[in-house]
Amino acid sequence: MRGPAARSMNEPFTGFLREDLAARRRAGLYRTRRVRDGLPGAETVIDGRGRLAFCSNDYLGLAAHPDVAAALLAGVRRYGTGAGAAHLITGHCAAHHALEEELATFVGRPRALLFSTGYMANLGVVSALLGRGDRVFEDRLNHASLLDAGRLSGAHLTRYPHADAPALQRALAAAGGGRRLVVSDGVFSMDGDLAPLPDLVRAARAHGAWLMVDDAHGLGVAGADGRGVLEHFGLGCDDVPVLVGTLGKAFGTFGAFVAGEETLIEALIQRSRTYLYTTAPPPALAEAARAALRIARAEPWRRERLRTLTERFRAGARSLGVSLGVAPTPIQALIVGAAAAASDLSAALETRGILVSPIRPPTVPEGTSRLRVTFSALHEEAHVDRLLEALAEVWPRRDGARG
Ligand SMILES: *Cc1c(COP(=O)(O)O)cnc(C)c1O
Image (cartoon, rainbow, N blue to C red; front, top):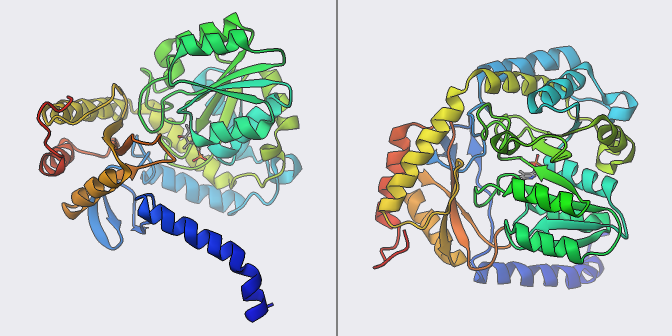
């Protein structure tokens, strides 16, 4: 129904929303979308203008790779555009099945299970493993999907201080009964640092807890062969029974997977609501992901290039007095502090043709707003130098600045 009556019935809601929007603007937290056109890459078109971008998670530069695109097109010809049903009805195709097997081999685990997105994988796994009366322990800087997963599961949620294994130990020691799951990002998405996984493994093991690691930003990138943070630390299925990976970042496509023992995967197929009650991802996408995985394995130069670019950037940024974290990954956080200051710096870089996202609360804690720079194997050294030159012009000079 339209008209004055409907309008006044809506007023309490629209009034509340208008007020919230105004408060976000005042706090410098208002978010707007940019419209990108054309292929993703170092040079990209945003809102109709060419920009040098340092914002994407396409670390290996596979999102526009011709072989990945060709695999997608071949997949469409073979399977059509959509899966047409959930995995447990008729949606599970040969392409999904092959991708699961190849992902399991890649991460060195008995089995893998595809999910439509990383967000859904995390919700589905934690809720399948825990319920009321159980306990979940999460790093306080975990990705939002992991924290939401903990909350939705109904288990008691404890957030321990970032990367603080002794604090986790104490929380585990103080906790009561029920099943226990420790959950951490592998590479923290907004800081780029690695979780102290060997310490988390010891803590979990000492207190009869399972460990789940979401390696969305480590897979394809970290470890000598790109098998992620578990490879970097030399950890296996016994140490970290639940491994989550995503396909929308280093693998340049879309989707996610969970890898572990047979029993875990079979249980998830029965119990994960975000697996059961949703359409299977388009099988053509699985074909594209298979091609991306092949390239990621066959071309280690992409990982090496990321390391070279990251080192070059860190050396240059340090000499500018930019406050950098300890991250050994292509995610480099330039901590600014106030949300408005981060937005202003991002805008100043953009007037110089460079795109770097400001990251503000609630994505990161209050007072730690930042510029998040990410590198891709498609960046060149000259691109890093252009970013450093622009930063030299806009980064606030402070005497005695932290280095
Ligand atoms: C991006 C991300 C996700 C979400 O994955 P999607 O496939 O984009 O839904 C989950 N966890 C972490 C750590 C991420 O960075």
